[in-house]
Image 1: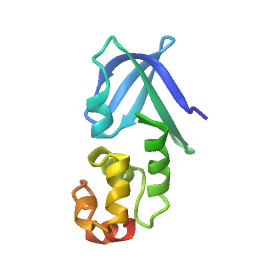
Image 2: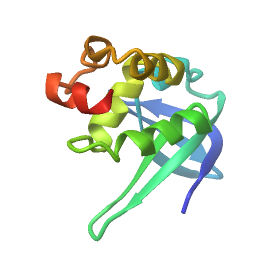
Image 3: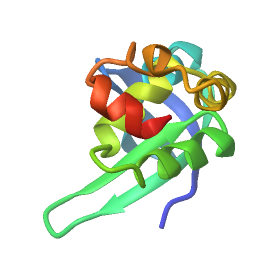
Image 4: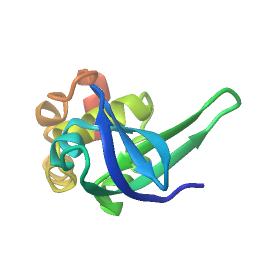
Length: 125
């Protein structure tokens, strides 16, 4: 499995980055907060990676920190939360904001994330 990628930012898409690592361009799905924090094309970047291997595809999800990646994994243990929703939550809330929302049972804050309705927000908190 791929756990970390360090390379040069090649380009950006709406929800992904192409990271050139030794001449190989890896397409890495990222949340909005991660994409905003990454440098401009041509500059170096490091991402913690969660790798999903399926019969028909390999998907890489990128995060600014190992803590953010752990929250991504933890969120997916909640019923109704898959990779897309977990990435959306982490694209809206930092790990510390998410931890606070859970501690305070603030469903409204979690529900601000695109794709998260009241029922899913309730299960998350």
